[in-house]
Image (spheres, rainbow, N blue to C red):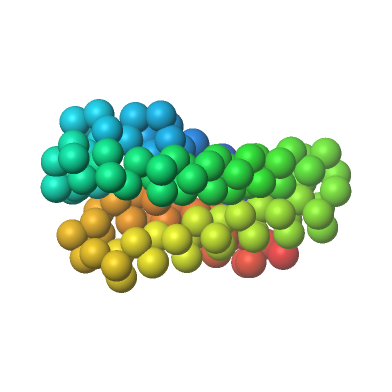
Length: 127
């Protein structure tokens, strides 16, 4: 169970890293504007500072999930499982907040929270 949880945590971290790239480095690009269903590049420009900060939150969660996996593999199961579970739980809750704030972003919320939620489930089952 923990191997599946670790693999999915890495997948969730990859998604969080991708969101970091979109939010912190490509926020005003037309493709990113379309993904987040913003009202044009002027709306993206007005929210760029907030998105930049949010992107780093995603980056730090990705690092936490990966570090948890590394600790788990290295034999420190308690610290690894704790960090991996906390990071994936935060990713899942962020996806819930996303869809509750704007139902049009449901697909994005599933992409963001799906792997994290399944990883968390396997972490809890395997603990």
